[in-house]
Length: 362
Image (cartoon, rainbow, N blue to C red; front, top):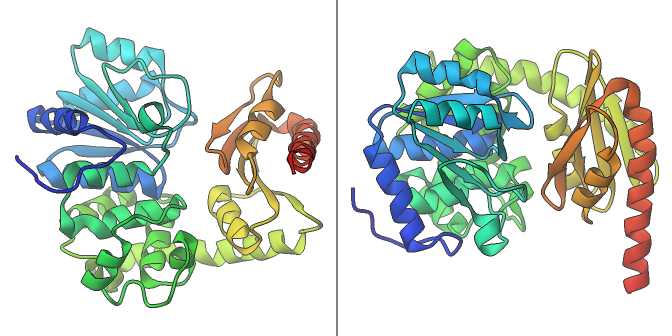
């Protein structure tokens, strides 16, 4: 399966060729991907490239746990690909080695190196953290799939270098002028499609599988944007979640006070990352922390124009049962609900410290 074209500067020609060989050798692969558009689109790009394989969204955080090996066995997979998931638990790796199933891990997070048999993380090779959906597009280089990669990229706050090429190919997708990825995400039909997929991942497993099937077979983005018998359920789910989303977003905006927003909500809808994302777009100079609490666990999505990663990691230190990390300007954290106020106090202290250091440097 020879593909010619521009190679990613993040991966070497040899690395790209190695990944393609893994894909070609995989007769019945399983793709585990992070439960967001970047992960979903990364899987789609690889699956459409070879035309085979099953995709499974990973909702556990932060790692791919050994319990998922059951799915590998059920599907009788001969290859495992893990995309956009920063951590693979040791018990998963150990089970794969026992069964002699290769594990190919493609990622972009600044985390401890994976123990996967084949590990490709652009952060270690170039300190670049472009979305995995961008990396996978550079691997597959299928021009007809630029729209899939673009969805993963803009939701991960990245403007791919093929944006204008995409706009010419599908002129109705990006109707307005844009300066950055979120201008497209919140002001275009491509952005609406990205949100439809984002909310679609919050559906039941059966409906997520149906959505994936639609995406695998789609000839163009218009197949998904046209409401018909095949997409009716997807649109209904989007409308239902979007109504709740807008209410939560409005409530969060009402609580903005000063340069920091620490917003806590509960309920049956875990969409803190999308709330935090849009708030950071609307209020780019504010530090944003959106907390979703369910039971005794609080999941947080944090955004800031400064180093929120350092602030998050330091804030969760020594809090039993807490974890956190991510990118420099976008992170996530998991904190016991009864420790959330303590975490908040530490986070605000870290933000203040980082601001003071920045002022001293100026």
